[in-house]
Length: 156
Image 1 (cartoon, helix red, strand yellow):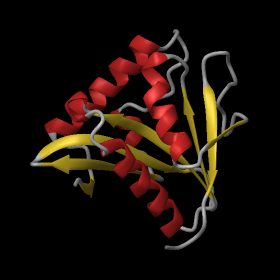
Image 2: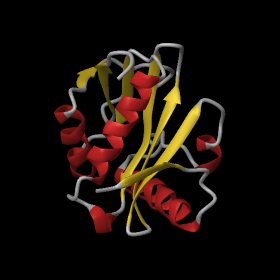
Image 3: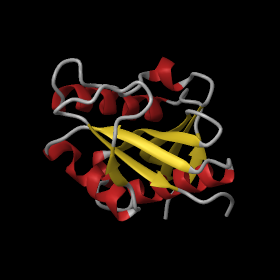
Image 4: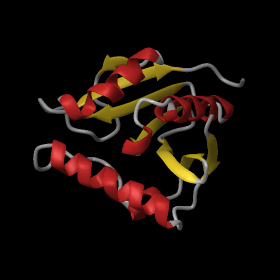
């Protein structure tokens, strides 16, 4: 069981996991293909960040960016390696989907890369009903990135 908390990103554990996320994205992506937000990007209005915790250790981070009154984007999903395969990512994604519904959003989208570093995340998104689709917002369509969308109901 994970405790999911809204996070102001001032804690060292959260900052370390976000730094690991950015480093991993740069290591696994071609130059110019990383769209992960840094700390200052995650602090912009319209973005909510959560962390999942177990035994006072951060297990996962995830964020929801509001794109419009009905459309949101899943951002900065990263499971700490110590918690891989233990359901932290699923718990976080379920929380983000639930929060989107609570906010009246009807569509969630995300952008991710291709290759082995992204396969576990893509499987998780597919298990939650996300379907491949077109680029959205101002993302460029490249051979490396891919886009997924989920139509969600309002309220819970």
